[in-house]
Image (cartoon, rainbow, N blue to C red; front, side):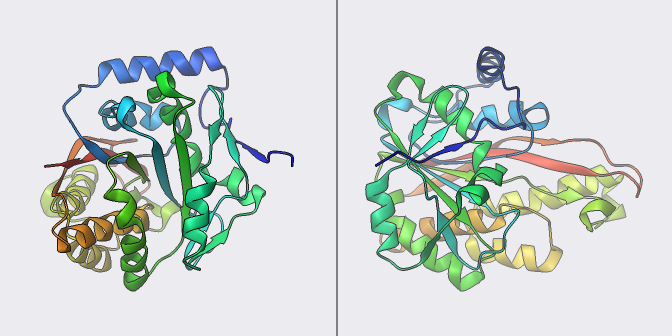
Length: 294
């Protein structure tokens, strides 16, 4: 049978292998190593010219020799999904090297009857997963033939669905040989995003945005799925990866309810694409953080 491959050598970063490698190495070298026993990261997924340096703070913490499998949970930007979907191909092609999808894990997930399949076109069009691939390939380069990936496209889940998928993924999160990459940008502010929340007491617009983002980031650091959900409902912050984040928080909660190993989460970097000062301005926020075993 011919191996089906999805090309993810996209236009959101430089296409030259040498230039891309040079960029990734530079950003990773500029990020400080602060974490150990990393179990999951939150990483942005905009063009690398905007968020590549921010993502490096999370990817710098990954210890490649301990990882056999990387789950990538990215939000769906182009198609509506009430649940989660799996890729229909066997490999993802990147400018650095191809990444193999773990078909055994896919088979286990399909047995739950809670996952559908992406078409190849949907797969290749979705940048939330795509933007994590070069960084994964780079930090795992020394053992590139010894790990697999498990890409999952996460749809518009309600609270119960986030809990359901969190419980499904909790058994995989419990395995220290698995790493979860949660793909998310934070606030998309401006009229073009149809979101212009502004609290004047924090100063200029960009300072209000930062306060809003960091309020949500605090609940993530507390690993509190309920507070994070209530925060989103109250403020409507346009965090595009809110559902993958919700799945991760519920997976952690499921493990902690079973007295499994304890976790802590810490954000390492926060940036905005521009500093909004007027209603005509717009920006996207980027944050990078890590989930560790205590």
